[in-house]
Image 1 (cartoon, rainbow, N blue to C red):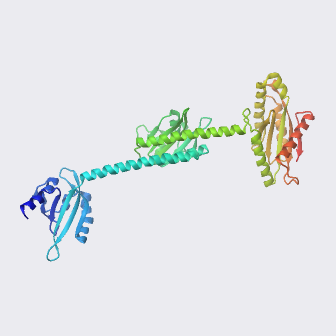
Image 2 (image 1 turned 180 degrees about the vertical axis):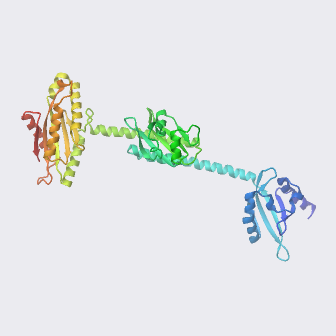
Length: 462
């Protein structure tokens, strides 16, 4: 080899070495020696395998050598050099076999390329790609949650959508969403909690603690000063929980609890995405509750809370259809208050309203479970009694008359009575009656009660 070629070999920007047929290095250039931080005498006579880290040694034996023997060359195989200072140098190796006159391996020539900068670049690229994928995943989660919330018609639909989003965002084993009822208690609206049965005391339950404080609560098994919730986690074979309050402009309206089998390092991005989803959920819950209240107001009397005429007509159609289908009796009770106008005229409308509210309360206490009560208008009330023959309907009607006649203590000056008419639709009637027919019969019976002296019940068959 000429001096020029020798100089080029030794100073090449890549590591070069030559091995004999048994894999021992017989020649090495200065570049590779510099990388290894060794002298030529430390390298020649040894196998290239000796200078690789543990993982690359295994790869060298199981993948590199078999491929070299089979094909006579390898290209761009990734191997990592183990440096004397404990560092690692990622490389790509190209090797080619030269055969002797006898057809056997005479030598193996190899070139090593330092790919540390390329690896750093690829790592940065991979990190950027993962970050982009994570961002895309978060955007997808927000979009999917918005779609699910938009389709929610009930509170539990919203809670179910929130469970799905939290499970996807936090990768939790269990997720539970609790919503506050009117009495201030928390009910499980969606999902599953593995510790509720273990923690009978509400005060120790994480959902209640997050709800009351309005702040994030994190509990990890093994932390100092384990409390009842931590012990419950251990009993459920879980390691960590995170409880978050569900907030709207008025304050906490519920809570969300995520349970994990192993300790998780939740990122700020994870928290921000779930916080955004929870804000969406709170907004949709407000909309659902407003719609529910508007629907209730549309079908209920605002003074007494009883069903209004629209709701009564709907329930009458449903009840009559069921009576015909099941061949059962149906009764309609119509009552009008005696003496109500005089109270209104003498004591004013506020006193009249007080009477109507009191009558509504006594009606609720007098009817059967399943009976429908409504205020038809003014001082006229209606009760729909499904599966009630003449005897059963008359019992309910007389109970109503007695309840209304007994004025609450201290309000005798607001005493009223009731004239009641009952119309009974019998199963298998030869002449099928309509809802209007039944109401007309009950109304006529009520007026007959008035003409007979009031404070009584008159029954008619349809």
